[in-house]
Length: 256
Image (cartoon, rainbow, N blue to C red):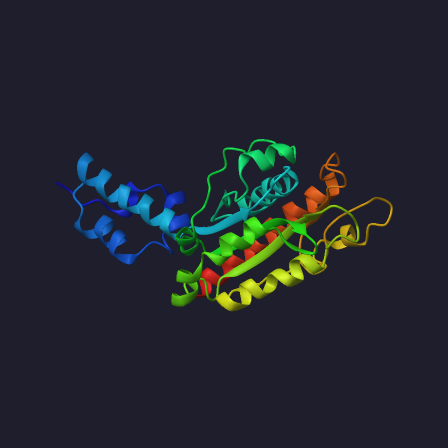
């Protein structure tokens, strides 16, 4: 039977994948593989697995009690996902309060976004961490999650990986800068690279005609008494942050 050659593979696939696939796979296709259906499927499955493995994975990890942070997380995921070669996924951290307390606080049921375990952090190439503020610092639920990452700290599994921060506060003076500022210490001990958005959001950073959360540290929103939802501008900033960090994570992975 004839050997499978490059002519058997659509040019578009070769163009997209040829420079990044492990050379043994292309060698198998070009020189060693006979063009039977089973052999082709076997090697093709290896290629698809390799492509999935090579994708830049960005994890949006958050805690949201009333849904404001989750809405920002959704926008961040959309922004990250629009970067070619990036796989973005949302995760929420475990709740630490009993249901009885949550009910008294009128907290709605949690969404079906999966709950992350500390060991799963090592799978990602970049992160965007989100949480509401509690007296100018991250919520205890997210701090409890980070406190459980001792194993990752001991082996420095997260060192060198980029991470951004987003947040929600109750008022304009409620921690839009102190919340991300105090959270940076968690990244530092893991050896992670903090990626602020700076003023890359452009004119949106200077909006003065409407209430807008966020800062050079990252995307943000104001919850007020809970009834206010993230505005379109705040969601646009979150989208920008997702795209911005995903782009950086992809560049860092490509340079490794």
